[in-house]
Amino acid sequence: MAVQHCHSPARKPGWKFYAVITLLLAGIAATSALGVWQVQRRAWKLDLINRVETRIHAAPVDAPGPDDWAGLTHASSEYSPVKIEGRFLPGQPLLAKAVTDLGSGFWVLQPFRANLGFVVLINRGFVPDAAAKQSDMSIAPGNATVLTITGLLRLSEPDGGFLRANKPDQDRWYSRDLKAMATARNLGPVAPYFIDAQEGTSAEVYPRPGLTKVTFHNSHTVYLMTWFALALLLSGYTVYLIRDAFFTIHDSTA
Image (cartoon, rainbow, N blue to C red):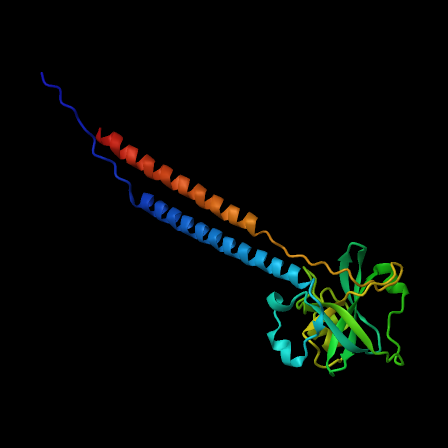
């Protein structure tokens, strides 16, 4: 008597399978693209860090005047050594909250009129919380001494600090927002940069200049590894699903 073998019909993947595979392929493409983008961002950041580290050791040049302000950018100008000649404007300085190696305190910013006529804010240095309350750091009206300030050019810091907005009406500053500071003190137009004074003073004297930290946040290596790892995981899962579907079809036809 002949034995008849019955074969069940092959179970082909349905639309849900193809929808999942399509989504996984899209995820692989997206995470791979983000990984490549982070590689490019990392290269850009390393180049920027190298240029700034080279720049800060250059000889100081004259601080940019109004004709040059439009061309100032973080990439081309931040932390450039500059010098400027002029006089401090009389009055109380603006105090911007700061945290340094010396602890919590304030940056002391004083308006300075350059000999060329424009006004720029000078960061005279750091003062601790206690010293800021006890010290009179104002510039007397009769003090018209001509000074040459040497320091690092820094661009404005608008929109306040991290999670803390500036309060101009209360004279409370968490970032060095130059336009807002100028408006609060009726200074008129000011340079879109301030200068971190770098001339050294006695360790017992405040404000203390020369505490500028030349740092850049660079987490692009972590980001690119994360995106490529996700792309690899999605690729592995996609291969697993396709292989599983293939062997399911093969077994059902065997």
